[in-house]
Length: 239
Image (cartoon, rainbow, N blue to C red):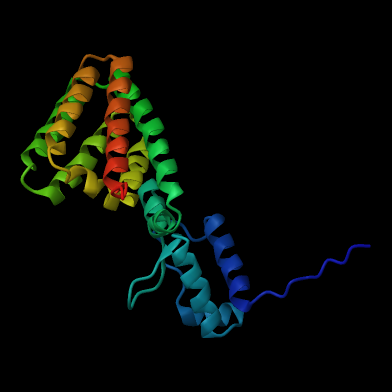
């Protein structure tokens, strides 16, 4: 018979389980404050360290937020909050495992090519006007590289917004921000700014014409060109 040892659990894990259950059941709803540390200590019969570690674990998971001098509060969940919770880990992954950057770029091409097609199918006149405004704002930022990068992201996020699905803009912004230090090298390369704007213009015109195939192709060409440029910038000099 196989021996299965029962693992001893730390007190904070028991507190954590009970708090998570109260949140899942709706007893503690998004926006509600949790009981005070002292009340939790008395209710569960544990010391302050167990309560604090449980609360910290909930905060790390993005389930509650802890502000100085206030009781922990159950977070109102959003896709943007979820992406923000894993941002530091994603950036660390990119720095420590260089092959992951290629995977992330491939994912971005796949996602945004489909989103350009959706935008072309679903955008109305007001949507197209907003997209043209994002492009104008991007063009106005030519002299400010930090703003140019931010408005590049805003342009791509606007296309994702045109899909009508609130998850897509968050994913696009997250992928962009996680790899932003690499994109900075791309947009600062001499002459690339005008090329980027021309490619964005092509995408806008395809979306305005409701040509899904052309919009998808324009986005694919834009992103794969940027990926190829990154490889040229990042490649070590010969010799």
